[in-house]
Figure (tube, one colour):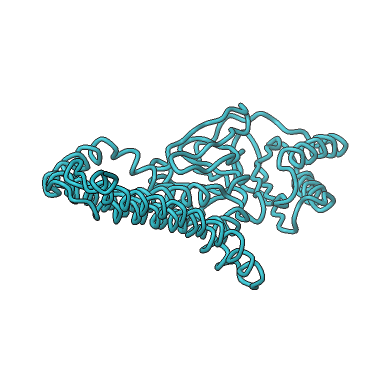
Length: 357
């Protein structure tokens, strides 16, 4: 009677057949657990004794996908021992291949992520700008997306879907996306251009597109600048910055200041020479002013005698504080020497201010 029960057929297979298949499935689950324990308790301890970190990373990342593969393979092999319909057998094979493909993609992305985190992220974090951090995140996302995209296409192909139709649809969708994202792409490559060329860094004072301020953040899409006078945050798309003329004020060795002082046309030559001497002495006595000092009797008009005064402020000094100190001393010294400045009518002559505020 018992032997008859074992030979009785259920869904095309005897009790013995089902028991064998179930045993293989259970054995694969147990084998997966044992392998997981073996790797965690033995292999990892061996890799910890080596000098390199690479083997620890590979073992740690391979652990779960390998156990998953053993389990899936055991379940598939157990089910393949049964006599199944063509449809059921086909679904089992397709499911098995899909799971294996997904497992491989999972393994690749795990290893890629771990290696990136261990070797690349520490290097990127040491840089001054955060644009390379964003590029790294973008690179990581693109690689993982590509791996999973290929895996999904292969899985769908194994499931019986037409890959040509899928790729054609993706091509049309990609074209539409590219047209809609032109500005975003422009800003992205503008950010890469800033990262590679390094026309400025975070903390630099720059002048671009009519704004004068300090760079607070350089992103993949835009750059944030805090204007000097208003103290406002201005967000400029990187695509516009890449196409604009940029003045990095902090790269200049010294700030050149140009001024013209107008004396009365009644002034005698001695007063003119004294005025130039006083201006030069004031510049020489200021520690924030460099040695390049120029004074000259610039021009004669019917309204005034004009004296040119050119000096350079050290790049490490405060421009406004130095100019304020210089101007206060100029007013004081000229008054002490009875040299009076006048308001002259504008003279229509071409002049160039070397460094306007």
